[in-house]
Image (cartoon, rainbow, N blue to C red; front, top):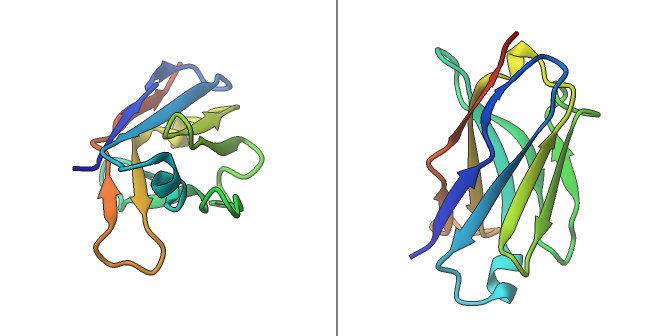
Length: 124
């Protein structure tokens, strides 16, 4: 059974940095994990969940970002460790949310997995 576990959230002052990690288990091999597109979403209180950043399979490695985080956040993956990272710099109060990790096999409606989320709070 595939499981995603996020970590690295916490309370930080405006302008600070955090690095979130999402570690996957249950994939039958490193190669299989590398086939998945990985992404980070976030959901603030009273708002819908939104895409923050995504990274395609290891063979491609292309990334995409929400306009609100471009230039401040960086997504990366380590397929050997089956881990995806989100480096967040120059954090703003509006970045406060629960951050979720998602794994999705391209062109599949069934192979989609979510983590439980990690809280990020930006406040002075």
